[in-house]
Image 1 (cartoon, rainbow, N blue to C red):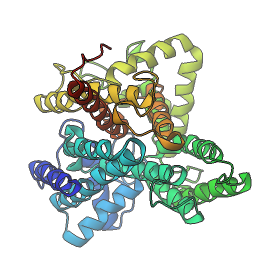
Image 2: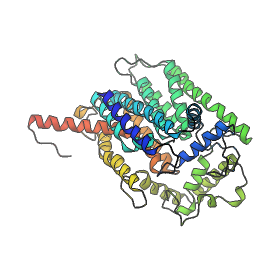
Image 3: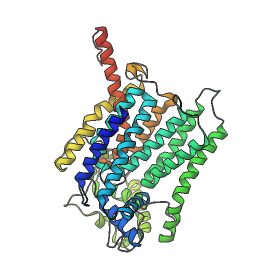
Length: 445
């Protein structure tokens, strides 16, 4: 069954890759692939991480950039080195990897926390979810980033909540967790904000075990330190590179300041504008003229300082603006400003699955529906693995509501929510079949 789901996943993602073809163009929601394609070519030419012309967000021609994921740029450069500058090859490799690993990881986590059938349904939903199919063929970080997050959650839940035949916590598990988390950070540095919550949950889950199997506090502290050490070692070469390029400390990427400045600029008022319209000032024109001579790293830092200033100067406006971002973040309905393709994919993915996602969260939470976490055939989530998923959804959502958001920034959360969609439909199917078999009236509510 799982093999069939993977084949379906592969077929859909290959169609997406071939549809986007061997050209690079700014299709809806995927403009960043132009930057990754160009940057990979510059790396192969020996020009390093730079652009030949003035580039988004405010990088001057020939000057170093740290705005883009180093790991994904190197992936693109490696493919172009081996096969020439053929975007279709990079699309096909990415699509094939995502086609197999995305359903497989979803199945592993869903099966461990919610049961075998719920795990298979989660794998199926991951295979056919419109956004995942579309972005598997785009040359951006989305697909690999979601895989890295699922890898982290798979290792974490397997470490703290081992199922049948799965090993107890060990030092190699902490190393693997560090590698997975490090990969996620190198694809999107925003994942760093989640790592303390991950470590805290692991401590809570492992210390909450039966006293006879409970690891000593020292062991857990050493395990967490190992995870953060591995992450640090993966980030360190790029920190060194950034210091060499800019002459100042930049941990990884120079995008937090730009995002926070533009996302909270007074131009929004209290109603967030996801993409500035043609009638609005451009993003570049919002940057103060007296700052435009700065290099990318210095400018990013100054814009972050100014963005924080927007918040402290008018915290009430910031609160209302952050609330208004929820409309964009959770958007599932068609809109006139979106293309037909975007509206169809949005409605047939998040719009279609949202009720099942909500139902799955309620069913897995137990008291909300049925009074037990395993009502309706759902397996109890051991060691509060369900809690870890909810923590990720909450933390990741808040990070984007408080800074800048677009629909595609929600996709990592969708990667978790499809697990709940599988749990939700499994719970519903069990409830309906049980009451139908007994000839009883179905319960209301």
